[in-house]
Length: 229
Image (cartoon, rainbow, N blue to C red):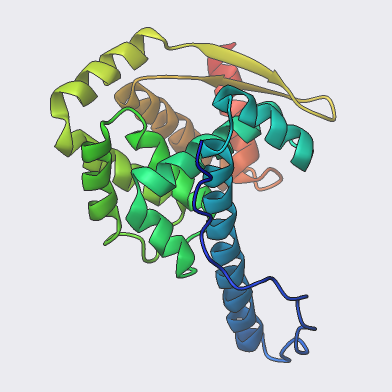
């Protein structure tokens, strides 16, 4: 097996001492953006190397376990990183290029990858092209929603079928939290979930006018529990 081509990048020098943190808050924000851009570029190179590492493996199925052990992360997290690396270097070249320019990080790139995972390579590249014009100013949730809309327009029949299948798999989960709390969540059709939240929110806001000893979020939580019980 021929060795894969590793992306070229200058040898990593030791990181220089960072200049003193600016005294103004605007300067601090500017510095944070600069550092985040550097982090994004390094993440792009990380995923390129990971893709090469995967292609060089005699048994690709073992790669997530190798990565998990090498980086001391969970196997599921390693598996997700391997999938993202392969997608960025084959199906989502413009998303990878945005990372190389420092515009988005790996988490945002994942929000573009996840909705496109069920598409063919050609379809994924079409969504990738559309999303390359929609990156500015979007948080991870906004990117995922935008990618979902692009997928739905590209493959309306497939998207409708996946929506039907997702409704069949609806469920409620009780997730233990720390400090004596649990999280109760349910997967609902969007129209039902939105209507339920609006009802909870209206009642919580009405109560908040009379009782400001509790926050709006506390009121929402209490209304939610009362309606269920």
